[in-house]
Amino acid sequence: MLDYGLDMSGVRRDLALPALVAEGDELEALVAAQSDWTLPTPAAGWTIAHQIAHLAAADANVLIAIRTPAAFEDVLKKVAAEGDRSADLDAAAGAAEPRSELLERWRTGRAEVAVALADIPLRQGFPWFGSELTATLMVPLRLMETWAHGQDIFETLGVRHPATDRLEYVAALGVAGLGLSFYAAQLPTPAEPFRVELKAPHGHTWAWGPEDATQRIYGSALDFCLRVTHRASRAETDLTAVGPDADKWLDIARVFL
View 1 (tube, rainbow, N blue to C red):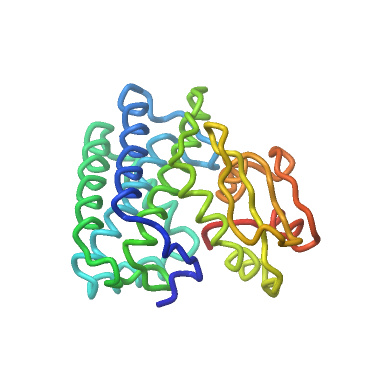
View 2 (spheres, rainbow, N blue to C red):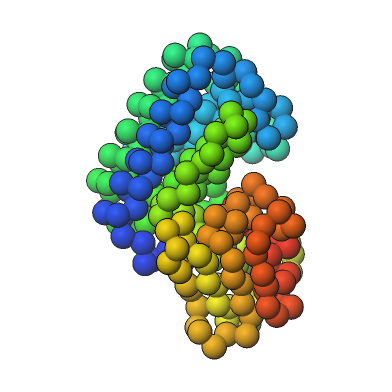
């Protein structure tokens, strides 16, 4: 099982799933109160409607992958045929729907995804883009994407995006994405261990890696999440790197290909 090299084996589904649901509910409460979904967001060419349509399309793909894995091959073929335009095309198609219909489709899809991810055996794999995943990884991936696209919408509306302990799942993905980051940058993955220490929203510390590691990153969990989801440049964060490999990682950090 490839899982993009992201080791999230320590994730507890019974805790992560409610966090995913809460993240979606929070974003829905924000957008449902907005009558104008045509406002442009930080993603070039994407309005609020595009952002919601993208999330809805991803949820639909999760359901296909889990419920009818063989049919996911058609999804892969469609994406391959569309190339780099695929996400934009799906988002544009959804954004053209009436707002009420798109909102209901997203709401229904989110609920069905939560049920599907709760019901599937933890070790049962299902196809995904370039990999095979399990619920253990898909739950935090969906949470991360919901949070990241939600960040775009909160920013568009000038509303503070509340930082909650749900960010721990996004931060954990960011830490697990070390190898993915170097792979995407076509660089060898460093052999040395890393230590990551992040200040959580309520003042405590989340930490990963051996305490005596010489390659270290520390700062706020929120800034780390913004960085690994490419919602903030490194210069816009308070993150500090110690060691040349850690310094390079902050330049290229990501949680998706």
